[in-house]
Length: 149
Image (tube, rainbow, N blue to C red; front, side, top):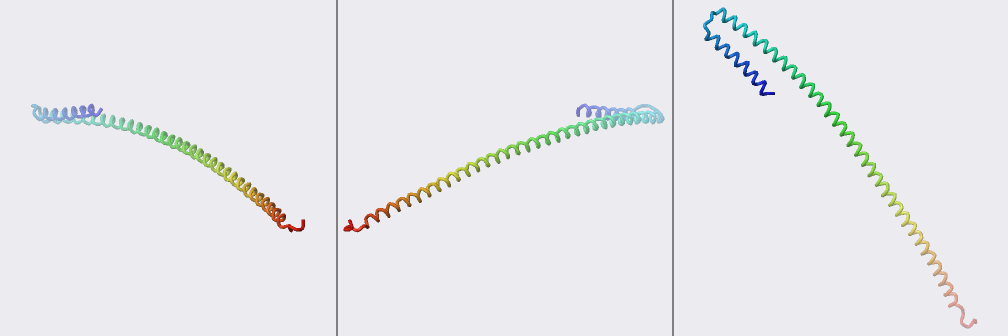
């Protein structure tokens, strides 16, 4: 596209230079030469206006395309941000759930250990009471007078 535009500009400039050279070396009167130069200037003006219109049109198309692409990219970015946010929320929920589950397991384990410790203490107290009673009874029987029997 750029090469075509460059070619057209080159043709226009070459035509203008060629026309100017032809005017300078042509055997015409001054009035004819001025008229001819005026006509060529008008032609250049018309072509310039046409090229400017084409350029404006293409610039407008490029602006519209750019706006459309920018809107599409903005929508894609917004969509990705929402998707990523949803994934982060889901993962955070999963992590929180896992943490609660682990915490509940830990609480259960501590409760079981506390219950086992409580049972062990109670068993120790009972064993102490039983042994103490046994020792008192044993001491009472060994303390009876030998001749009293």
